[in-house]
Image 1 (cartoon, rainbow, N blue to C red):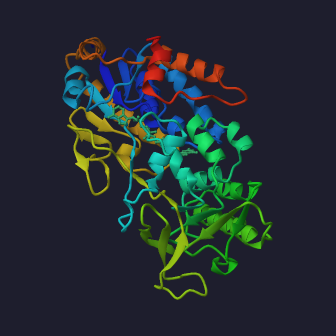
Image 2 (cartoon, rainbow, N blue to C red):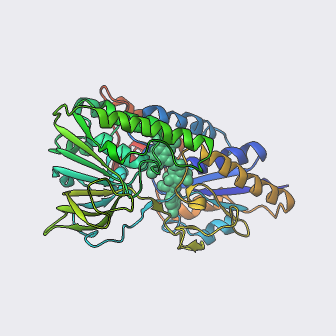
Image 3 (cartoon, rainbow, N blue to C red):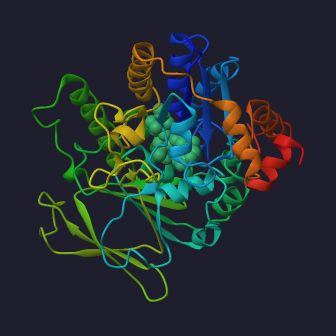
Length: 437
Ligand SMILES: Cc1cc2nc3c(=O)[nH]c(=O)nc-3n(C[C@H](O)[C@H](O)[C@H](O)COP(=O)(O)OP(=O)(O)OC[C@H]3O[C@@H](n4cnc5c(N)ncnc54)[C@H](O)[C@@H]3O)c2cc1C
């Protein structure tokens, strides 16, 4: 059998886990992992909070995959821009989309288009130094910031906004964002959840971290906290909710220490509009059915918000040539199968839920389908890497291989003083460090 060639679109966790599994199960297969960015690892570099460096250690495992001779990284190649799906399908025996969920879900409320309203995808990409994320520094002139959402991404954002320069310098936050955060005049942070504290999808460790911010005092009305988790949860979920409620009760009991930043936790508050003249000034909220005591349900109230960050989920970006399920915001697939010879895995397959390790089982399941299919009908062996390299060369696409990424990695570490890394945030700089161009 001629060694099969497999293309993977996206070098995030799902793409890396899939490449690893195929390399294990099909020794001799040639596996090309493309990414639109010159750097690998998807949201591990561009999403995970810059003050959670431990979480990023997973990249050591992914790097071992790229060190296998069968696996290549081809950074700075966007499928749909530099190559199309038909070209991949013509040159590889199987194609796996692992392109994540890059787009912010819309709130669908009036005022959402005002300057000063931004999705967490864009905001997080900016502070993590993803090339192409617009310069959002002016937004951090805000004094009152509302973060809408009750998941860990919302926690990341309020926690980082609560940190001082010294704490931020210990992270790998991109330099322009760090300067903007450090100079931020913020006095009020609002963490706004549409549902109740028992429905929030915070993990307990991340929630507890809010209580460890030296310049932040937390405001929370204890009366709105249920005494125990609602019935009907499975054991693990009930344990997490009980622990979260305990942490929140602890927050509510804290005395007002008069610290420079107040963090208000609001639950059962449904965003209905953003208002302001030249930009966001206020967020209008309607209390939910179980609104906090003292507010009559349905009676809207306002909070000041000259920056509103929405952290309410993501959608995949369609890739021309692949079917798209618009209602779910994912690449249309059945159990990972998209079309003959084409598969999907990770967030673009199942939507933006699940932490990094959750993509492992997903990717292994899909990779095993690919392996079984290739074993059943080996085909004639498509041209694979050689033909694709020629196409990219002819189009003048400057790719970054794994050695190029290691040069970026080394240069970012070398220029970081007292920090984990000092990121390069422009494509031209990344290419020049990677390839010496
Ligand atoms: C803000 C945030 C913080 C998070 N923090 C944590 C955390 O602390 N711990 C944890 O376990 N999980 C965390 N997660 C979840 C975790 O990041 C995801 O589970 C995981 O990254 C999903 O993997 P993926 O490979 O499907 O997608 P991604 O990681 O998004 O990877 C997709 C890759 O595809 C590339 N791509 C997209 N389109 C194309 C194209 N057309 N051509 C070529 N390449 C393309 C992208 O550039 C990207 O590199 C966080 C998520 C977010 C959004």
